[in-house]
Image 1 (cartoon, rainbow, N blue to C red):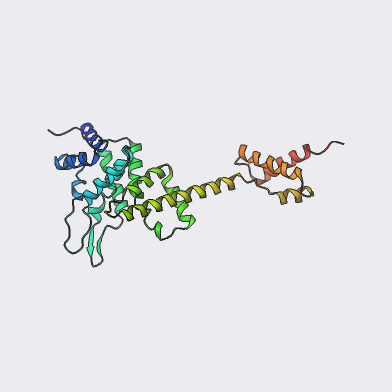
Image 2: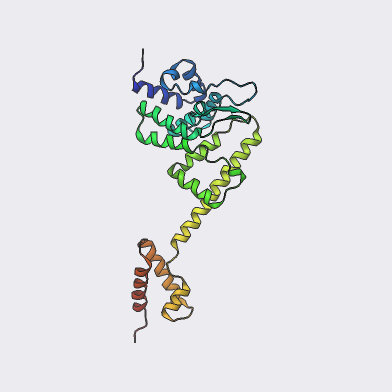
Length: 262
């Protein structure tokens, strides 16, 4: 009997959220349910080329999914993160390649999850995680601060899940490789935190510095300049969109009101 869309969605979600997700997903595939619900999944069982050897993608996908936390968005993203590989698989003298499989996979993911009538918020988040799933590649070769900022900005509210997916997307038999991946992701998170703190501090700096205040009011260093800087800082916190001209006008009023009375 053909399952309704609601039952198909429930079957996939149940398999993904099972305590033993690996066993549940293998049952999902071997029972034929996947052929009806997510036909792209069995298609990941690619044949091994005798010359250009590569990992069998279905086994890798299930292993990655089983390593993730029991979060539906994250597990759907893990399940679909390599879904674009069959469509982009090429074999040449350089070996097997899957160029742009993340972008292709994101489109496949969006289409399949919509057919299964998952909520649009889940569809958007999962598709975006699939699209970004390969973005971390190359970090070990050295990223500048701009690349780190771009990674964090593009991930947005999905940053934590994206990093969890990157950590899970290592199924090597060599423990050294797992340690290296986790080290690099930890380092990336540290740098993101440091850059965010720098930007926060920069955003809190007054629009005028101490030297400009002294020149504006023809005074030397002293406590009043410090008080003026504190005033400007509080002004910026309460009115973050205030431009320089209006800030200067407010400072003039404050300065005048804090002159000693005759």
